[in-house]
Length: 109
Image (tube, rainbow, N blue to C red; front, side):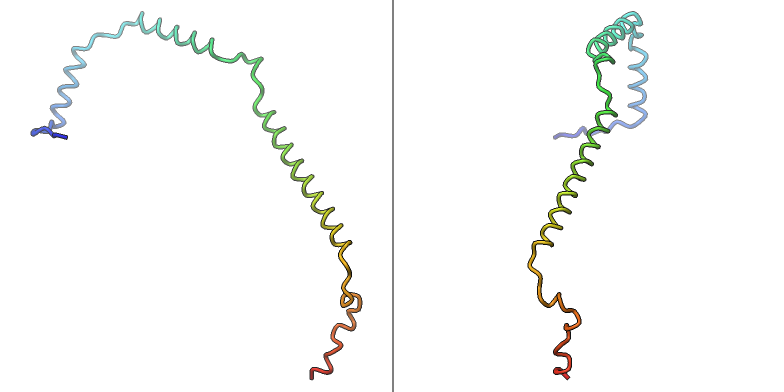
């Protein structure tokens, strides 16, 4: 990429912009107003009517409630399953007699 030999300074750029502002035509208010009306009509025709829109907050609240209910159901099933597993495990004979837990304590010394 080639760079110009002379870089313009801020004064030259300001003078160029001021000259462009002086020679620029004044904005046509009639054209701008018609353009504004056309764009407003296009936006209004593309917008969904308020009675057809679904309220976002209600949808999000019911969606959150469904997730909370699903998590609670999973927790309940997990607790019931854990209780069933604990009850169906065979009982260890050592757990039945905790007072005889250290039977070998006298022989170790």
